[in-house]
Image 1 (cartoon, rainbow, N blue to C red):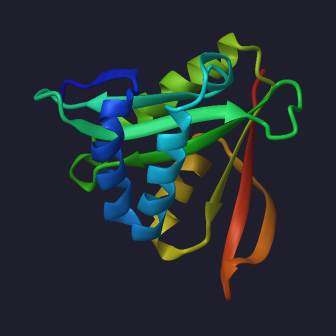
Image 2: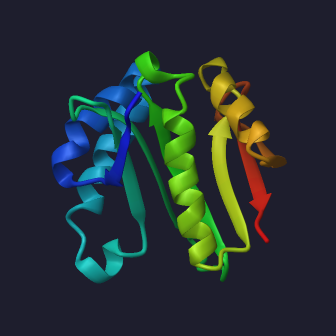
Length: 160
């Protein structure tokens, strides 16, 4: 499967939100708000975050992955964000290619630690398996963060 990875544009928002919503509808709502704000920021502020999309052979968006700085501006730390692929391309390495692109950027930016947050909710089980296979370790749990028995999982990957 030929996959092109490129920087996300504002025109990609509807396709990206559709993909995210197909996994967890609430995430689609939050993603729509996030990306709308992201593409309305001034260039200096927006340059601190980076989002990529994967395109299939027909040019349709089939995945998204991005990263941004730690909200406390901790040097050398980046957070992986909004990592979703269309269900139709799961298991085809599209997600891996998106992740590898972000990881390559992180290394070029001299990142010492890549972090992410996810949820223990069953809808994220495949993602958690992927993160673990990519070397991320569970570093913390915020219990009942999203609601009863819905915990935020914080994972990290040390980069050399």
